[in-house]
Amino acid sequence: MHDCIVVGGGLSGLYAAYLLNQAGKDVVVLEARPRVGGRIWTVYSEGVPFDLGAQWIGEDHHRLKRLVDEFGLPTKPTPTGRDGGLVSVLFGGKAIKRGGLGPIETWPLNLCQKIAAVISYAHLAWLTRRVAPSSWLFSESAARAADDKSFAAWVKNTTCNESVANYLSFLTGSGFCSDAGQMSARGVGLMLHRYGGPANLEGADRDIFVQGTSHLTALLAARLSNSIQTATPVAAIRYTKNQVEVETSKGLVTAPHAIVAIPPACARSISLPADNKTLDQLELLREMIPGEVTKYIIDYDAAFWRRKDLTGRYVGDVHPVDMVFDGTPEGVTSRARLVAFVRGTRAREWSRLGVDERRNRVLTLLRDHFGDEALKPKAFFWYDWTADEWSGGGFGAVYPLGALTRYGCTFAAPKGSRIHWAGTETADEWPNYMEGALQAGERAANEVLEGLA
Image (tube, one colour):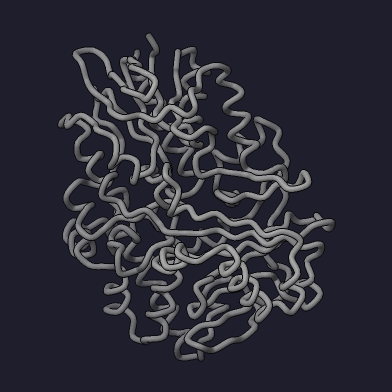
């Protein structure tokens, strides 16, 4: 019999299994897809990698950096334009080119509005400290009040300028791939606290994997030899007296412990035991709202936008494509790519469009902001994570109104539990990022090792 079953072969599940394997434990990973990696997925064209899923390594992503160093994976800085260049901004119908990288620097705001924006950021920083139990400024009453209010409503009530309120709601909603009206204000504050504060998001895209992010998950999987079963969906998880039984499409698997490392949408479809030690975590996971996002990668022979002193970055609230980044690793000159996103309800609306119509709309936006050369890409890739059967959305999830009050805000399993939670949405640090996936996998593995001791 195995020591532990890991349900889900994404980064979090693979890392949990890797740590258990390193500790000498017998572990099996059950993955529904025919491949490992989950929401990490690299495709190749003429030997060039294109990441349709998770891509960036952040400045404070210490676990991810350690793993990159351990496996000797080559990375390159992202060409963010920190040394100069212009960001294209289209907000409220007003199109401009502006220098700087921070949200306040690039906002199309006048002086009075910028002062209001600074005040709003101070309010947001205060919110992150008031709603997180780990903060010394935590207030139960403030947390409950924020949990009963959408982030859009909270911004409107705390910001004295309508343009600033709209822009802050837009940026936050885009960042979480959700609409600001869906998200609990406490949930947003809690996640920002787990990022170390709003300012830390500016460093969340520092580096890129040269060989593609899937190289990381492939190396993790290789360390697990024959312990991974792909194309093995899980139908149910049951308790018996001293073990966990996991029912799959290929039969029954048993172990003293199980780590569930799957997205919220998949947690709804699996029958789990209503055990009082883990029920709150299960219900919180099931109620989380998956992000809605389609990612587009447009490949060119050269970074033509740089010749025009443009960073390759765009942000706007008019077109469904709300953000564009230069996704070319720094120093690479033979190929260049722009990475574009459609998120929230607009991603859902675009799911009805054909491939040619999507392509035309994306390229038209890029032409409007970067020039006619944008209409002649070498290749065009895209993936709709909302339509993905085993993700149900991406790249993470947000808390709906009231959920944190009902179920608490931790996924750490109570002592004596046999089911443990992983996956980036359950992380205490950097949720919805690869770093969060690693932190959650590490926490779950440690819980299992403690239970087996």
